[in-house]
Image: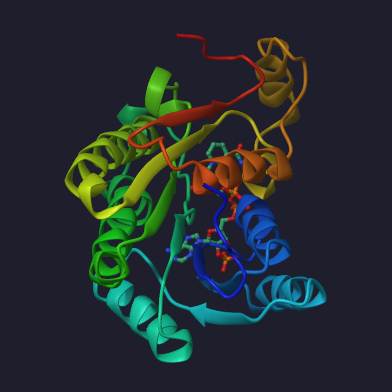
Length: 248
Ligand SMILES: NC(=O)c1ccc[n+]([C@@H]2O[C@H](COP(=O)([O-])OP(=O)(O)OC[C@H]3O[C@@H](n4cnc5c(N)ncnc54)[C@H](OP(=O)(O)O)[C@@H]3O)[C@@H](O)[C@H]2O)c1
């Protein structure tokens, strides 16, 4: 089935920068109205909004912290008040607090779990009622290959992202009969602020292990998200976008 996307409504958490911005633009190009949530980077969020509007699409910026459970309902209610429906949710907001387990502070653990896993739970749960009423919904959760293979210095992040994959599969089973699909994308090393923060040596060592021999681009992740949003007969899957680093 080809879905008529014009005037459908999407929410992208963490859409102000990086991968989320490219996902938001992909959706805007297809004619969806796009709500973008972000945590604090107002300048980046406004740039994204301007880029969405350049595509001729409507947009809504919402500054709120997805690590606070109550904010998820605020986010979805704002979108419903503005546009009356919610068809697509991309749970993209995420942080890393990398350090070896022996040095990991309580806050390194809780901040990553609250943002990367609890945030996904809360925003997905808040989206379910409107999607069930519409008998249509598309959810895509941004995981990571760290959630599949683990990574030194990322016990918190890998646990959160593995949690996202298990959560995706469970909700996909619960919601399939309502015509709501729930999938995940697991990016590898993608060129964004998140990877710019890594040391050049550590990054180059990792790039050497990538069969396709380079970092990925945010628009390449957005392409995978767009595929899953359009796929009628795919649910509960994790699509790996990593240049061949993980092969099952
Ligand atoms: N880059 C990679 O190599 C890579 C690899 C695998 C998976 N991923 C995943 O892909 C997703 C996007 O990553 P990225 O590299 O694009 O990250 P990024 O460039 O650091 O951008 C992160 C985005 O998330 C938002 N955000 C962070 N914490 C938030 C919170 N508590 N509440 C609301 N919004 C919040 C940020 O808002 P502000 O702009 O306001 O700060 C920003 O929009 C994440 O889930 C990440 O784990 C990335």
